[in-house]
Length: 287
Image 1: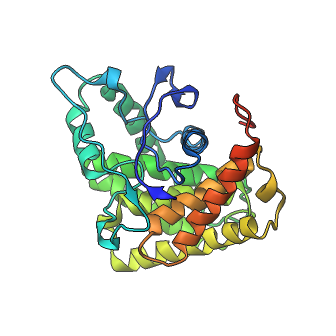
Image 2: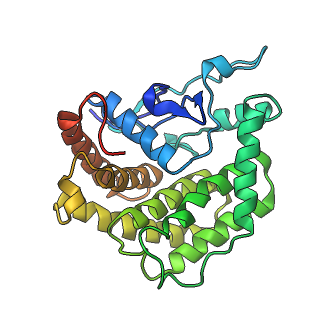
């Protein structure tokens, strides 16, 4: 039974920046927790999502982790209970992080995140995507989690403004490189995370524009996956399969309760990773 909730892990996939990190992850299948957890952690590390979630050994003296949210099944959860943000963070976790920003290791994590976010403010996106490829377009999606997280932790309006400028530029592009591979997947991932994290700060017009592009792109990738219309769709030990499928799934979680097809995206992602589970060796696969 697929479910929507949180889990933690700090095994081989959770070592980043030479420190064991517990990532808050979205788990899609009770039958494939370990594999899906590994794949999600791999995808997060691949995109260098800011490492600002805690590991028990990092809790500062006198502090404690906020309560872990209860698992929620997609079958019985009311749409209204699908709170925002819902991807990797929730309101309690954000509050906890804000309180810890002057304590190590969070102080160092925040410094690295802030440096990235501030740097992106000085790097405008190209006006068109005509010369962008699946390789060099990825960075424009990867910047969004940094900018969105910087805003969540500081309420500084310039981070929000830059995140919106980035999203506006991305939705203005006629295509996201090939629209069928890693470039589009990285952009879809970044758009989905920012859409969820900044949801309460989006105008109705912004929400409609961003959601329309996410639906368009997730639809393209989902059709390729479901119909096995491209090589990576059945290459279950290949990183293109993991990355592209995860972007479909993340978009599905971000838009769950808003569009009916989101549940189909999640079901296809779950089916894909069940096939991965059957083939994946204990020591992993293509990085």
